[in-house]
Length: 275
Length: 273
Image (cartoon, rainbow over all chains, first blue to last red; front, side, top):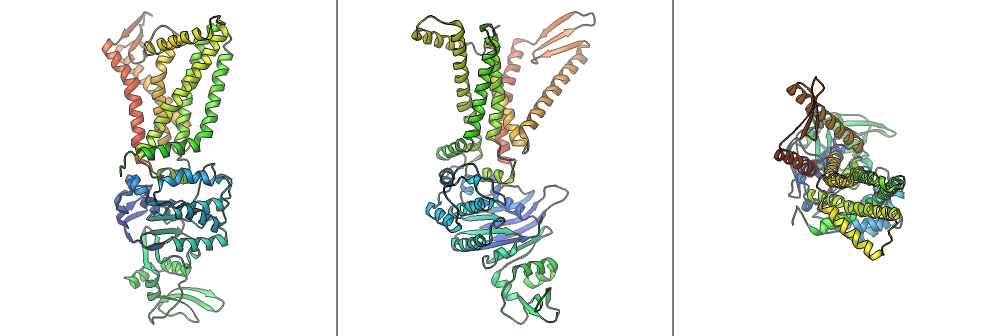
């Protein structure tokens, strides 16, 4: 559904953010795009949306070149940016003005999502708190039923109950025909939500793997002593919490934060394990 | 699906723009009307009405640059830029909304209001004794004559004002379109500075070039006439031939404004957040 081939992009020609980046994303999955601050997550998402243009390389999203920003492409993708700036109109008016642009928009779903998020539907959008605004936009984005939904730091500004509601709604909205990409640096917010993880750093993709594959190849456990299979270790009350190569075929629960740290600390070893 | 123009999409976009920006644009329009009324009411006598009319046109010219800037003021924040650019409508439709709002909404409304204020002002001072019916007919006839001669540069301040108003309106709105799309922050101020800077540089360089070639003190008017003052303080006027004059006139009045609007369309398709 999304194909990126040899993408090179830089805000400055002398310092490229991405060089020859290739990535392929399939429908029916929720991808978590993880990276440090400034790693270029938002830039990559903007390239996918046609809001930034690559210096070279090819991007194809739902069989369109995003750069052309054709209506037939834009009505099949929805982008939730990190900051929201909404007009001074009510939610009902917003719906009347924006929903007709999206042919698969479902009004009942939208109000259902608002109810789940506890967003009052009779208030003016710009009078709401940032978190409420963000939830209104997420509800709208989900109700658009576009093939691709791209969310840049969607959980920023959301309180703890809302984060859990967010995970619930996003998981429920996924179908075999849809693809969601969620970029965040708050990796814990994606626990039990994503089924594919992409970690980027230093202009390259360090890891792109499914949760199943990560479970097969790595194990997350607490040990008393470190051995050569350990990729990352962190002191804890019970000993050392580690991410290690899963040589024994152990079953464990993925800790995304530890996985992220392990990949950033040992990119080459992680690549060896997954290739 | 037609990815260039769809009447429904265009209608939706126009409606969205009017809803979202209507309050700001309406407020700005009311301010313009207040300024026009102020310029008329401060003119005092009928003799000064032509000056007040010129002031009215000038307010309209400033007004359209601000109007266009408000319409395209979506790029100061990344989130608003992303929302605007990712809205499912074509570049042409987005551009056409600005064009239609400027020429089919702002311009007629402005001219009608100016005409009403002007008529009321003249009515008040002339204290016409004829009946309302005859008065309206007379006004209509005058207006038609006024429009017929609009582009002819007669020796009449109000006619000259209106005659040059439309091309200047076309040109300045084009400058505002390009400026709003090239500058993300403080686009109005930056566009005005660049426009004034370019105008000054162009004027100075043409005068200097001409002065160097002629070897005398010169002043170029409208790129069609040169006023030459010799070292013996004799004054001459050199005019381009009529065909060259009309070529320059159409270049300045039609080609450049049209080019600016088209640059706006191209820039919109190349615009990034």
